[in-house]
Image (cartoon, rainbow, N blue to C red; front, side):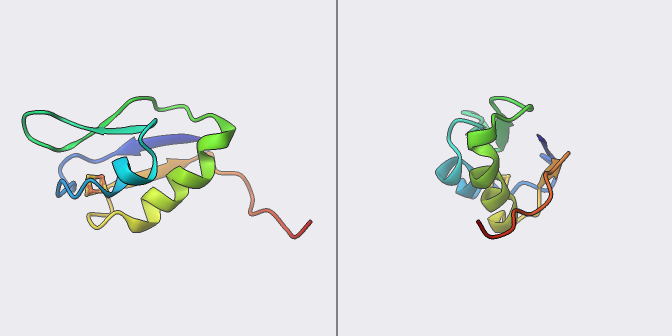
Length: 72
Ligand code: SF4
């Protein structure tokens, strides 16, 4: 699973950094999102999916997503 961001859509809310600080960061100068990594570790999948869903600018795109898990 990979993540990308569109800095033109980012409104510097910082929600992504709150939800997945190991993946997202904010630029010190303009406060726009920056990625710490683009290829995700499995333990980061859920946090990054949540960050994408909650991003107010719809600036976060997740690709290569796994099929939804079914009940165990
Ligand atoms: S949550 Fe979205 S709008 Fe907010 S800083 Fe992250 S990418 Fe930018």
